[in-house]
Length: 155
Image (cartoon, rainbow, N blue to C red; front, side, top):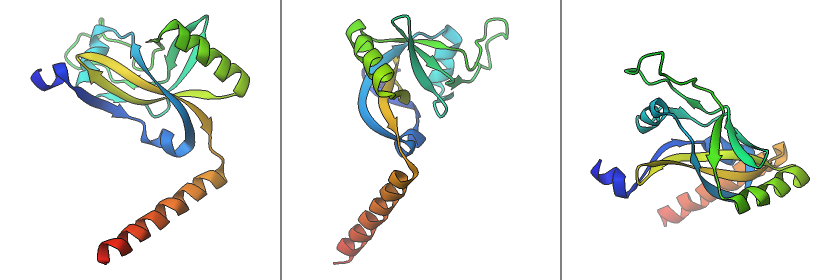
């Protein structure tokens, strides 16, 4: 545990979110997990792809994130893979997010799950959905950047 205890280890990354959404702001949140969930996350068995966060009754909740059940634990003590988990954010951050999500029609999406000094943390982003033409423009821009890099490399 030497390099993990002081450092930073990315466990799961939601790369699809960067393509589907325009990221406006990011927040770091803790996640309330059970023991078997923490063991599975440490092994890298988490999937953020379909996940999203909602704010209800002044609390942030993470939905639809899959954390595989731990193999060596008894099934009696194991967790439900897609259960709703509580996100740990400061009250002022939650109040700010309530206004943004309800009024502007924005969404909260998890981008990364990582271990920071032994704690499981999550980067959640306030996002706006991209339209199809935005995605096409992004692809065109990326391809033209690659072409430019290729040409520059040759000279």
